[in-house]
Image 1 (cartoon, rainbow, N blue to C red):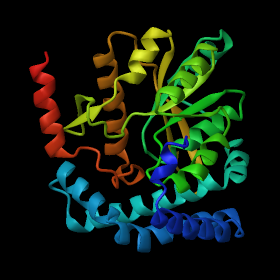
Image 2 (spheres, rainbow, N blue to C red):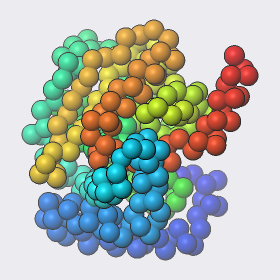
Image 3 (cartoon, one colour):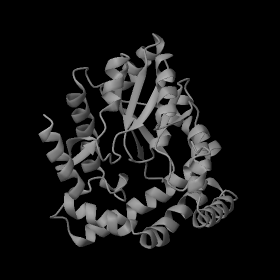
Length: 307
């Protein structure tokens, strides 16, 4: 979370962006839920994506991973991705409606019974996902069923936006924990109490270990696997896939990842997410610079030198 030291980084331009964003969200929240979600999807697809370079980033990433994909298919997926990103943003700000709808999203999959058993015995659970579908939807669905799934998040660079971004995470229940020393300490305490935590594994990490993701080297944190081993937490891949009606989700829990070593477990998590992305590429946030090839290559060389 923002502190007094970070306050010096609050720039006037960030304040202006924040005020414009607050106005857009306030206006959208006056609309019925389905209309506001669809409307924000349209805004991101038509305006925000092109203006911020996210449309170009998504197309470039798709071209790297799927070089044989036609331009028409790449463009269609990019539009669907931006639409989904906008919908996710709106849904996460409309917390009350999201939580209400989540009551009808029954979790399924081979990991559901394992998670229920672990919760019953007070064993910690780490739910691992990526920027796929709406990653907050799974937290809403499980927390509405008695779980206390706290979210580990990376603070936004715009600290004005970050102030209310945190509220969208907290509103789903389970708590919000930033990726700094204080936040991680709170996350660990939460986990050790026998509660549950949620981590997104597909965020670029400059000094992360190199793992394959969709056929390319991606610096990745092994923290989830390390914590699972240290605190004997069940490690469960979980995915919230957007349904055809545009506002509901399937919540699927895969088989828990067996405990072995951090590298093997992290690779399994990456492979799990990659399989989901290949199956439904329009559901993943291709707008992120996940690989940064030039830095990934440098990190790979450093990693090899240290072995």
